[in-house]
Image 1 (cartoon, chains in turn red, brown):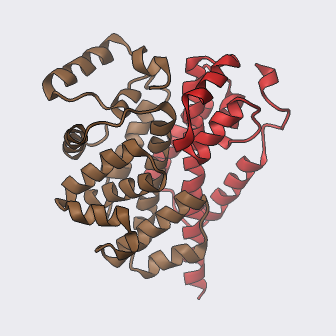
Image 2: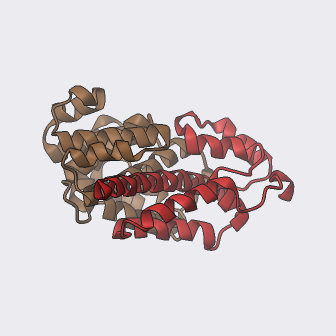
Length: 135
Length: 193
């Protein structure tokens, strides 16, 4: 399935942006039990056993570095999930993805987008606290 | 659901459980409940743990407030299944249907306290735009919401951005109102574990 993916390096912009936000808020906020529980989910779907490769899962999680038709399905899951259709799944199946691979990659896309929102919110909180304490 | 494995790929234990639930509750098993039984080691086990912690774990927000946040985030995402499930749960938790309906119809004119309104506004902006500034967050803190409450609200937001995306992508069946009411009663009694 190598031809399904573009040749972007595994470490791409989306992931670097997330890491940057985490550095910002981790300096100010202590990680609570809830964020830790979400991180355990992220870690499992990215790094545990699966039928999609870790690289495929990382790209779906980051919504970056995928080619069509998977990029279409993953992009919709991340940014306009109400518009996903049966045709998006049919196209991905026709490209050779199994049901279990699509199960995993859709979950990675949903969790990845939600993790970015979570981190963006925590980074904004850390920023607001820093301003309060400076002022 | 759009993947055949999510309709038919469950083990004998899960199939028996689904049959018993249908038999005794006289309501269908919601697809949200079925999904977490498919290869639970990949997603379901940790997703349930996180969602229960976010929705029922220790927090200065009430269960009703958190269910309202779930319904509000789902409304922004236009996730029909999650709107149905969590507006029903919020209505039962508050025992106040008009309040929930008012928030989901027009947050700014809805009769809720300033801190909760500012928090819902922030969660809506984050969910819609995918980004948030320190200024947006200062408005929430200025309305009297604590740092920990913000963190707790962001956990609810993450839980329902995840579940809503899966509901829409996998095509969860939107249930009849009486089935959503039965599901809401279960969620208030037992939580998400």
